Amino acid sequence: MNTDRNKDLVRRYLEMWNTGNVELADEVLASNWVDHAHPEVTGPESVKQSLSQVRAAFPDFRITIKSIVSEGDMVAIRATIQRTHQGKESTSDVMWFVRIADGKMTEMWTGSVTSS
Image 1: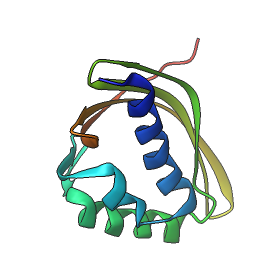
Image 2 (image 1 turned 180 degrees about the horizontal axis):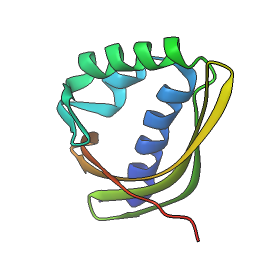
Image 3 (image 1 turned 60 degrees about the horizontal axis):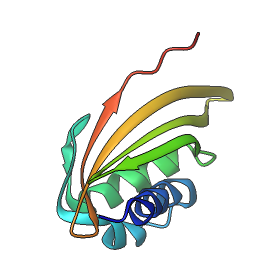
């Protein structure tokens, strides 16, 4: 398992969210994709719809990777999400864990991040 390739795959997924390029979903997501924090969003087509909705509501939506590590078929990402809603800027710290199989992202879990 190539951990650098897995990290690059996850970076492409985050690029999709940062740019709104929905075509990247077909490139990076398995057909049976599931985000366990949003189980209603399954597969690339559902992600494309969610992405379009998020980008419409938050045109400046941006994910910044703080750290990314990979071991075996798992990638862990610590990131910051920035967006503006009704003139108010909002920032959230997030942690994601992504499972990769056959060169595609198959599952994602969201963990909590606390600031010290």
